[in-house]
Length: 626
Image (tube, rainbow, N blue to C red; front, side, top):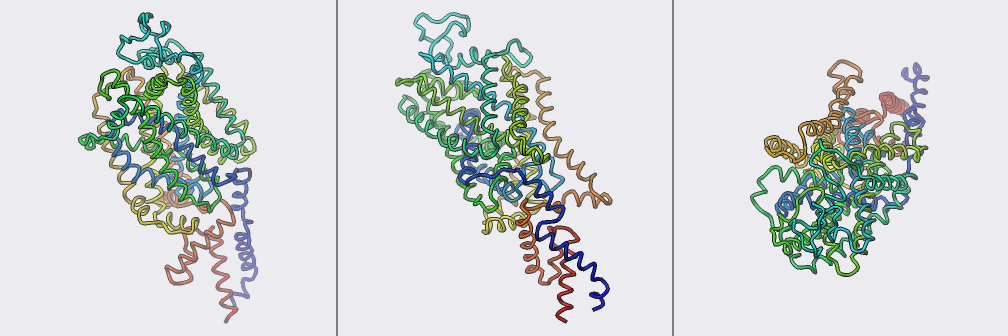
């Protein structure tokens, strides 16, 4: 009774604090309200699903997967790729969708769950900048081919003295003395004007520059209205490519040798399965195919309604992504089989592997179509550009979301911010329009993206599953989706995914370091620039760990613990849902520990003052009953 009489004013103040917490009137909640003010939402769940499809089912499937499979042995690459998708790609995909939807935050602020790992989000933004620069370069080349497709005959189907080596075409204009297709020569000498190396820059293509500008303008128009406009664009970007790919496959299968190419695609060379580099490339490709570890998926899902069935979406998208890669592979390899038949070569020797494979095999295949090849060519390159813009829009929006989440006033200036970003990226992409552009793209792809994204995958897995905690993460999913997490996800998240990533990363990089092969046209200083690009991105992770530790209070041990412990305001961004989540965690603690004080020891109570208020409230009720 003396407790009640001596501290009535303190109890009233603490009662008011508890009331403010529940009703969302604390300073932290006011900041949260400010964070979500002006932040868009998907108009429909279908728009989110289609946008994720257009992001994940994009250039990574149609452009990168075929050349990765061709370079790494066809069927020998396919088996590791499918296994990696199962134990690494899909678990990471589902994890990222959950993180974004649960928190309602972009790729940087989502790391309030493990503040020391904020650098992962920063690094992903840097890498996304690299990707969006060279993706739009690919889109510029696609526009170049699209405009050229209106010519009769198709310019890459016949010899032209303006771009043929030596400047003289055969008299019949059909015989090819170079043992290479006209499409191959057209791409190298007319589109790229490819130089001998990165140190041999002599020329810039004004046509590619104009196409690059057009590409960026279309990207800006697609994102200028924010996430609501992305949903509308996705209805077209997610569906149209399948129509064209299926039609092209039907045409390809009617040609001689097509089935030989598909057989080569699905027939593994078993000895290659023992090479770590094949598994390493399979992991890289799974990241590109599903668009995981770039921050884009976290950004997209952060605009979802809190209870959206993201599990269903993750399964649908993962299956579609795999099917699209296989479909694109069948289209490419059926045409490679036909080329091998015509040129009397082995399939692996028909063309050079690499990023340009798509711009050699597809144009040649299109030129062999007897029924209005111009129409088929326009449809294909329109489809290819559609895939590119679906990916590029998501990448730019990821960068903008990270900026807007840090500076919330910019949510009201989406159009201006997007215009500034697109203009800067256009300028950064100009070196790609030179005759050494392919070498610049190799630097961005191999160093700025490949190794770095692998590193992010490891950091994300360790941060969420081992530091934040697998049990805690599964509990959050159950609260959000009202369903338990199956054993498959627990095993892959808790063990298989992080361990497989670490092992493959170590063995793959050891093999790369021991390789004596030098990239043609890449001088030593160019390789140095490539590693510098990678370091600018990856250094963000340890840098922000150090900064976060320094910013904590207490001695060094307390600083380290504080840096790796979830922030007090970590949780759903909506104040009402946040409070329900706190109560949900407290209730679980009560049941697991068996006594009421467990309600006050949760790691995720709002703050120590709120805990004290609850203690006093219980004590007061107990005294009243006495």
